[in-house]
Length: 234
Ligand SMILES: [Zn+2]
Image (cartoon, rainbow, N blue to C red; front, side, top):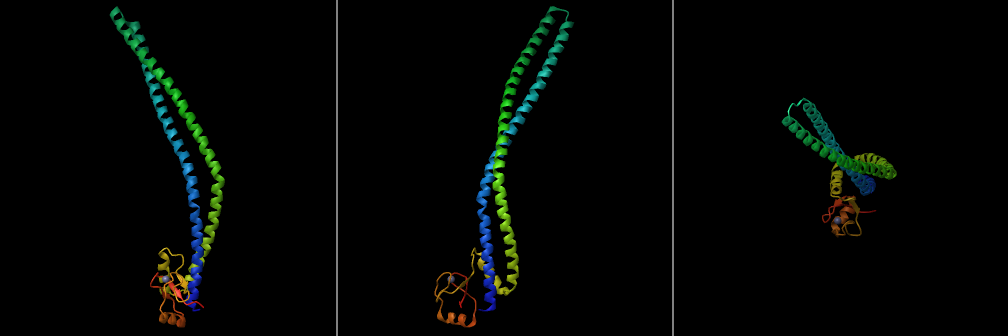
């Protein structure tokens, strides 16, 4: 076996290992996505309720201000009442005060309704927060497990990649370029031994003359049919 071929096959062996590790890493993705989706649903619900609570609290504050303002108005009317000197003015002041009291009564009833609604949305928010905590607690073990397994594979990948860099140094540049180009076309393996008289990857028959040359020189040749690198085994 020529040293170039030997170096190339060793490189490919490592690349297949790297590919296998990457496949294993990718297999975690659906599981992580599933965990993320479930958690996100819970987070979204909390955010929606939180926004509802904030909105209701704003309305509540506004209504409280209004009530205080209108009560002050009633007090002022009361003071004016004390100062009226004739019947006509008194009637007008009383009417004004009654109107203001009616407004305040309406607002206070609105406030009661609002307080009830606020209590409801707060209760929903609290139960959703508890649900989120539950989801996160449930996922903790699964996430830790996945993270541990991924870290392990990442470690193996780092070793394999380091090894690959060293192995690639032993392969002539032009051959390495060809090999990398073939693998970049989503091929896991780029170098194949010939099978009988055919390409080991696509089974296309190779002319006898070429086979003889390859056998005699140990040349690594491109298959014109499928584009992989071939070598004469043994
Ligand atoms: Zn082929």
